[in-house]
Length: 275
Image (cartoon, rainbow, N blue to C red; front, top):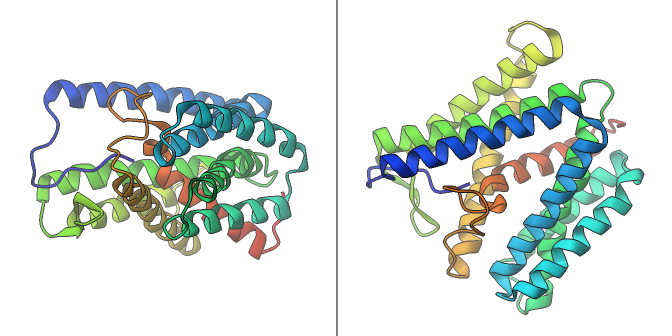
């Protein structure tokens, strides 16, 4: 995700309008393919994984040809792995993605960093379709994850911009504030609980376990955002690409969602929930 503003000047009106329009178009497309499900949904996330791999490698290697090749390779590998989707495959994918992300700050050399990016990107192609195909409440689970991440991001941006205050992690992301983080967490938690209740049961009751899961997912989403900010700062990059007008690249928009996917994948594996 891009940097939420704080007391510092935010984007101009025209730039903010461009960001809002891009976000609405993307959200509408994502929701449409989510409701459709099946192979269209799977293929979209395979494509996303390829783009994320391309963006990661373009950041760490600065070699567009290599990055493009990696994006195609990741998409091909994801297609091959999709029929094998199970709780075990999801758990292994989530663990590999997390290990790759945690290793990236410490490894040296281009190839290890590129492999970390491949593991990171595969989470989108393997975990997201597996969650959507969960026969118990797959659609509700995906809508819940979107609600948590989107409302966390939106509320963090506008709360931080309105209230300002102490910085959250100034060395990693200078514009993020504690007020934005708290506002985002509250909004993401409530939104996740309400959307799950509506999508899974048709009502708007409050479930303590869903509230706790939504809180954990909101915090994870912001951690994923900070992680990607640290990666870009390490390599002196502002945006992962310019593919999304006003937002940068797919990696910029999906860093928080990646963290929620990994959390969900590990939880499904830990609790032996079959997909």
